[in-house]
Image 1: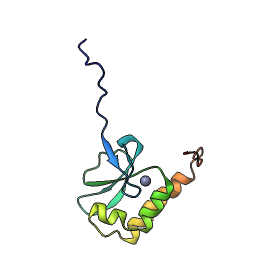
Image 2: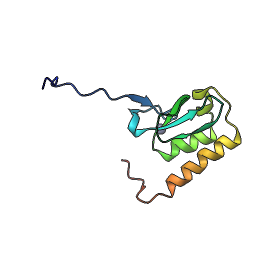
Image 3: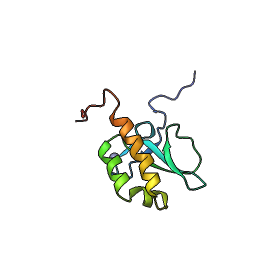
Image 4: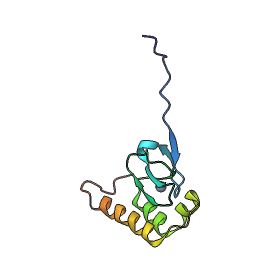
Length: 104
Ligand SMILES: [Zn+2]
């Protein structure tokens, strides 16, 4: 038992590409650009490709879908199909029970 004391295990930190808040990876959602140019939400966080992160704030998702935050972060032009796929994921989340606007 030689655990170092007083040191927390390092938690990887990532930045939401919209609001620029820095959060731990677990609190962010990874959007990945696969090597063949597809863009999708990556629930495992392990898909290969370039990743961008969004926090759980629906406003950030909406801005990411309608704006060009992801285009910049992923260095690719999002197609309407990409945006539609992210919109579908957002709507799925908005439909989940227990997702109240209690984030004060
Ligand atoms: Zn955000």
